[in-house]
Figure 1 (cartoon, rainbow, N blue to C red):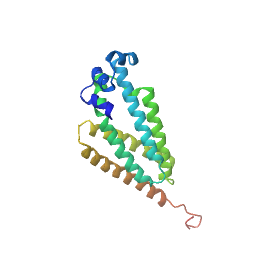
Figure 2: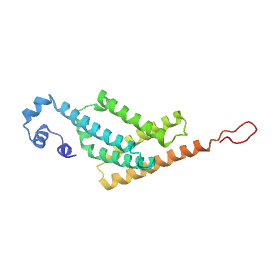
Figure 3: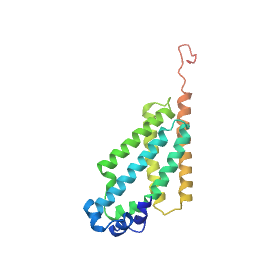
Figure 4: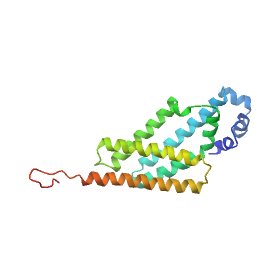
Length: 193
């Protein structure tokens, strides 16, 4: 977003203060260090993104795989917007992804994605759904971070997101078809309804 534009020009507290319309001294009244400020920016970004992703997954007016395609696109775009912030965090030597708040947000989104897959893949056994959820979330996160770290244009990021979304949808559709194909048989060899 707009507050991250100054981060894209290499993070300095002077630029953040200018962007916020406050003095550097005022900024340090609220944030004791550059790392604390970076942490707050990243935490806010994660929280905003998490809410948007949860809203997409919860929109039952749209078919599940349409929601997944939308989620992947929005997630890749979000990662593109925060790419400069990630660079600044790395420059500061901060491991914010391991912070309790980051783990809590990640767990919440993963739990919501698991519930989404229960809806999208009702016949798939829970262990298979759980693995599928982990694979999609982990690969989506890694791919989006890698692609957006390469300073690609929005069109390029969108193209990658669409390809990734189709790959995930194809995999999940195959899981669903395989589950539907598992027809139990009654004694005597007849199919059970």
